[in-house]
Length: 233
Length: 369
Picture 1 (spheres, rainbow over the protein chains, first blue to last red):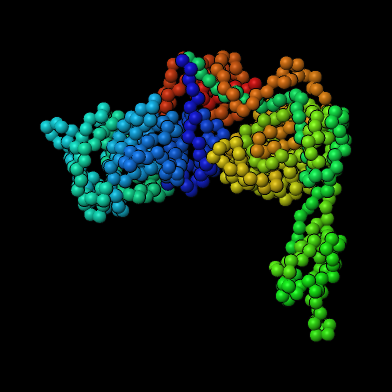
Picture 2: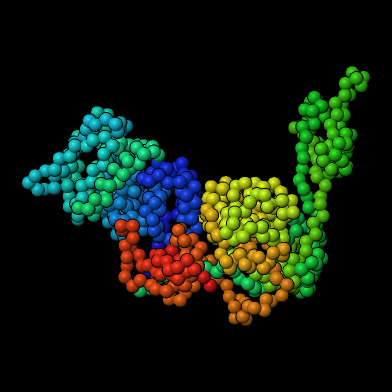
């Protein structure tokens, strides 16, 4: 077996100020910029410290947000392959992609593998401005997997809910929104979704997705968003 | 299982190479194809135009642009000297007078009656191009270029910025020291200086102020690097020239220069060198074939970054961020994949270094040849 040298993502030079809102750890600005420069010179290297992984993932989000050129076909998105070498799971790859691409409404997230399109997840993102300090629910989602009982989820502002589901089983979604938020421009919607290899992501952070502030509070919010994808089910 | 790593050559101690020597503008070529040259031989001579200076003549004299020409005291092509009056306007029977003096030594190039701008050209300077290396003239393709075949040694950096420049090499700091602005003085004007582990923003500014043409350093902070023009090494980076060429031998941040590179630089202190920031290469013309290089190695060259399978005993350079630049020998290669940082799979290699045994992912090493 021959191993290939996987190229990690390559970035233009991002300043600390651009990256900081997406960092889950407080890092020295000079260290951030020098490390990003280092990645440009040695793109084949693997991060060996957690802060390096945090930084690479943050830079990827910024890169995707800046480019917004990800291959797209209506509501289908294809994850850039460069996300995979620095993701510890497919779920984490999906979370990085969602933060960068911030698709609105209902979208399917795919991975291109061996010339096949593999469905990873369906994203349901609430559109509109969200006040993350409020605690009133912004929506309700009923998930019907064809079982006796249906799963009902109340969506709170700024909350990301991850419903893991292996395979490509179809799920009937009934969505209701409250306040000024919408899904695909509507207050009520019924949609047959496929959960894919990762699952269904219900994104209550609003669109456009406003990056957290680069401070302790912002980092706490980021960690909350991320940890749902890192849980073991 | 075949684990691949990039192959990097740091120093090429001597091989025959074509070195292109060029005048800034077409001039007189003083050598012929096949002719033998010494390093100090002048091989071409030309005039170096130093630029122009424009003056808003009509505005200074307080006249319309089309009338400015009436007050000129110089004709096109005439020589001018600093402080010399080149235009004069008298009013009220000579009681009120406005004059324009030349700020430079040069020639009067002309006056534009539409814009009211006067143009002066700095005096051209004679450029004498020396061979810089002992060798043979391979080609004279045009009136400004001579291609010489000579022996050179080369140092390959990791990144750089700026066009090719030439000058005398001056080692100013040790391989793991900061390049301090205080050691950069007027004697460094026109030189290529070697500056240890970190070239700071202050050192860069001082170098530019005294007219340093190039810097070789282990590292620089990324922000400073991109502010001075960036590099063309990465397809995502852009490069521009700020009048000073930089070659980084290790990377970003404070990075001690490799022993091999630093000792070669120190051996060649005070020699004439060519520095190319865009290719990150320092070329040192050599007087003759270095005796210590075995014949079979004289023409060996690693172009780009080739890859090959790693093996126990390989001499490697660690490129893991925490040990960047540390060199050693592979002692062991893991046979089973390991998971690091809770989910990234890789094979680990054990490297014996002067700092002890270090274990890193196989992706985080380069084979040195």
